Amino acid sequence: MNEFELKLTFPNDRLNDIEQFLIAKGGTRRQKLQAFYFDTETFALSRAGVALRIRKEGRQWIQTLKSSNSSQFERLEHNVPIQILGTAVPALNIHLHQEHPAYKALIRALREAKCDEKDLLIRYQTDIWRRPALVRARGAMLEYALDIGTIKAYLANGVEKQTAVCELEIELKSGDQRAVINHAKSMVNRFHATIDTRSKAQRGYMAAQGRVSDSPTRAKKLSLPNQSDGAIASALLNSCLSQILPNASEINAGLESFDEHVHQLRVGLRRLKSAMKVLGLIHIYLSESDLKQLTLIFNQLGHYRDLHFFDEKLKPALMAVNAPMMNLSSVQELPHPKSCLQTKEFQLFCLSIIELS
Picture: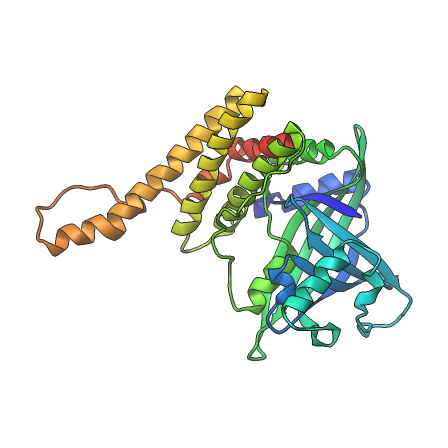
C-alpha cells in the first residue's frame, strides 16, 4: 500500500561504477519500461500530488495510482496488472483502484477540476532501461534500480519535448525504513551521490508545461497532530525537509536562475533550527557534526544571498546617485551554490534529518 524510496543522482563519470556495483549485487539483466502518464488538460492530478500511469514491464501492462503522503519519501501506491497483450496502450480504467485509499485523492482532484475519467489523456511518457537488483539488508529487503532513458512530454502546441533520465532508486520492499537511509549514506560516501526529490512524473509535468524546473518551494501551513511527541516531531521535521530538499534538488539540477530557491532553502534551514529548539524539550537533538553542518550551510548560502543583493540592488542604487566608487565583492566571485549542496557532508546531514524524522 505504501511505497518508501529514496532517489539519488550522481556524477556522470560514476555511472559505470554504479552499474558494476549493481551487477555484483545480482543486477545482471536490464528491463525495458515504457510508462504513459495520464492527466487533465489543466494537470489537475499533478497539482494535487496524484500520479496515474499505465506501464509496460516486459510484456506485462500494469496500471498504477500514486498519491502523496505526509512524507515526500513515502506515497500511497496501488498496482493492478492488465490482462492485455500487445504494443497498444490499454484503455484507462480508474475504477480498478476504487478499493484503495489513493482512489479518494484521485476522485477529489477530478471533482475539484470539474473533470471525469474521459478528460484524462496521455500528457507525458517515459522510456527507461532499468537495471534492478534485490539486496538483502540488515532487517530489510531493498530493491536498487538504476534508470537510464528519457521523458517525452507533449506541449499544448503539439511540440514534443524530451528530457534525459539517469538516476538510482533505493526502494524498501520489506522491513525497516532505516535500511534505505543507511544504504543511501553508503552511496553518498562511495559514489558522491546526491538526493533528488524530483519524480519522473513531476519532471514530465514540468516539461509538458514547457518549464525546465519547478518553482521555489515555500513553507506550507502545518497542522500538528494531537498525538504523541514522536508524531509531532516527525511532522515538524518532515515539514522542514519538504522545503529544504526540493529547493536543493532544483539547484543541484543546474538551474540558471536560482536566487529565490536559495532564499527558500535558507528559510527551510532556519525553520529546522527553530524546530530543533522545540524538539530539545523532548530530548531530540542533532549530533554535533550535524549541528555544525547546519550552521555552515546556512552561513554559506547567506553569504551568497548577501552578495546577490549587493549586485542586484545596492550597486545599481549607488550608481544611480553617482556615489563614489567602492570595491564591493560580487556574487560572480562565488562558486555555484550546488558546490556546497552536493558535498558529502551536506548530503549525509540531510539523510540524518530524514532518519530522525
